[in-house]
Length: 341
Image (tube, rainbow, N blue to C red; front, top):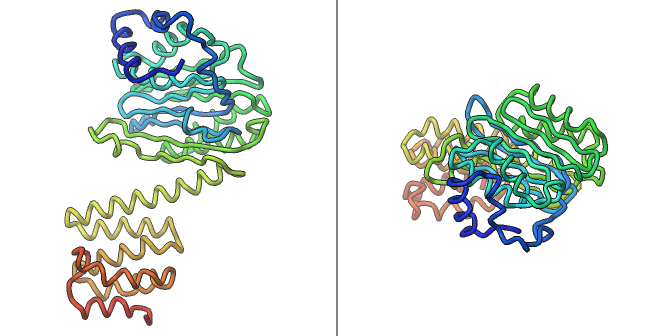
């Protein structure tokens, strides 16, 4: 059955002191395994980037909001995909156990041994060192498959064709770039082989930093979900580009705080390149320049943002009070009139 946080803590203590195979044996013998069963038949990949140490999971399914149940990841700990007839405790408890230093192989082996119905499960795990483990139960609906590579696993069930796992494996190993892009490439390869026999509905991407910062909200590099869509992978790709742009925006804001305006401007330019036709990066790029007295340089950017969204003009006079623009009526007037306003 799904585990409460207090129950997980108790089981974690037990895991430190007892063999993993005994963990779930300590649960109530009359607990009904059917209470934890949710049929999330799907394909997914879990991986660690050997260069950066980032950990990630990507998944697609014909099931609503697959990202709310299948992917689990924690900086410095590991990444997990739990699917088929899903038991979420494989994710929550799996991370807790890996946090104690147990390997992905040890954790998955123990959880499978202690599971009352392992034959319906499918799980992939990677730990913070790149160790992997994968399990596909005998009752996973065909076509079902899994593969292990160097620091990654792919797993799938209820597939249209038996070639899905091989395609995912090849795409991930052959694709250059960051971990997020490679994970999405693996999903696209699966879809290229027919994917889920039922069709498409939702997708998710979760990537976390190699080491915890002590600020968990900053450790999630990408946390994207497409809950219900006729083209979930297309939408996931779009969201990834938007997320990349806003990471540059956030980096730019950080440089502004540090007083490094040139670096901030470079980050804003990168965001603009990823989001052509979007006014927000242009506007805040312009505000940054104007805030340090580079008014002439800012005016074309203000004009471009006003052309895309005229409401930005209304915002400009409010910014001096927030100390985001000089408290100078002439400067404010020049900005508002940029582009013929």
